[in-house]
Image (cartoon, rainbow, N blue to C red; front, side):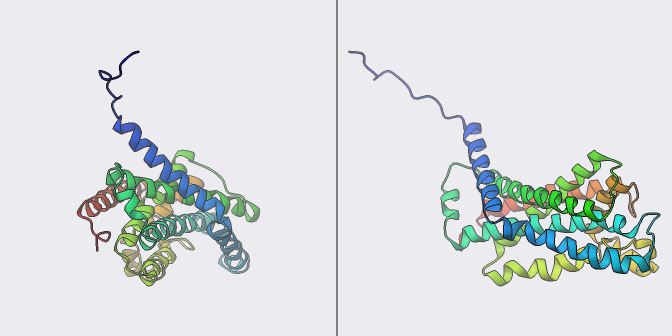
Length: 269
């Protein structure tokens, strides 16, 4: 009879464990998004229809052309990006705060997953919802107007970077939130005003000088215009600067979220 005393266990491959953990978080987030699609996808579609019906059709007739494009064409990329921003942010802040509130975040904290994998998994979940909603609102846009596609890679890069940035922003909000009011505060009083003043419905070139200068301090203006440039080929800002801002924002927010997780901020209180 053979002995197993001299055998050794196969070494644990940490990269495989991390990948499985990351994939599990993303799959769980995707399942949650699809399971409650009536809450995660449909509201943005309905909102887009209302914006096109009211702003695009009724008000758009009085506004006329904007930067040489039909008004509905001009606002379509902005409406898509607005949905991407709110949904990628909202998905992560609701999901991670729910994990804190339900006390099952501890299961992640005691697992062999490093914090950067946990942060990346939740941010990727927000990216998934942002992309799904972005595709849905794009299809709605095509019902109301023709939407040319000038630079596909620019559209995809702006979509992914924006979703990632606001997913990480939602993670930070969830990290510090102590109740549901604090979860809703930033989307209501920060994101919504910045989005509406971010060039979704107008070109900043129409604004007086002082208002235009203030608009250039709004990061969402750069994201919306980079996305619009990908479709229409026009932008109120330098597209290279917009991508530099989005990339830097994603890197800084990711590093900040991981650093705060390492310190236990918001999760050991």
